[in-house]
Length: 340
Image (cartoon, rainbow, N blue to C red):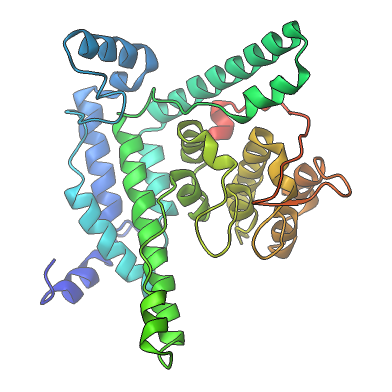
């Protein structure tokens, strides 16, 4: 879109079909159908991916595909980015968020995505169990939590096209929220001096996929889990913004009322707190814990509060930048039905 017809193009992309689908939704459905016809989902499986990477390494490929290099089977994202830009412009005018396009992306590719989630969860559980057994055999109790608190990110699905598209959607939503906040800050500081205005014109914070996924209210749980497995260190890292939230804080702050959304929030809270139980005791820059945010958004006892309070102990709270205190690890298994 150019500047002359951007308003007309944005208006066109806001038109919905009789089924309530936008141009962005239709594009995702069409590409997903094309990919199914090409029968390329098998390339996303860890076994196939490993064989392909080994072949690339033997041919001097250096494992570029495993590290997120060019994937010949990934659909182009230029049109997706253009539609996301128009969608975000409409969202500024009261349009829907990006949870629906992500939900459509999941529904159209549910078999491949949920299979990947199940494999990643099984591998993560096996790795944690193996680390605990090794530490117990050596009589090193402290190293159990050390091994569990520093997992390595999975690269099994780094070239899976659905995951790459989900990352594009997350980043689009992340940039949109940053520019919205920057615009609001500039309007609030119109009377400030030029030096103060220049200080307010900051560059975007570092893009953190797991934090970006958590910031999409009602994000499909499958994509939240894949983000957590690809970037496990971000479960323990505060967001690089004015709030300093962990992903658990952000999800606890989802203000949802629809029964399906409430259930999804409950499962998301359970997944994140099981991965990093200490997060339930961390305070953000405003001094709030995930439990505080959950109560502020009306989360019920059975839909998340009980899970959060199960790790609370009096006097064990800490700030996001303060010293950590160890807590017992709770094993969590997430089946394909829960991921969906």
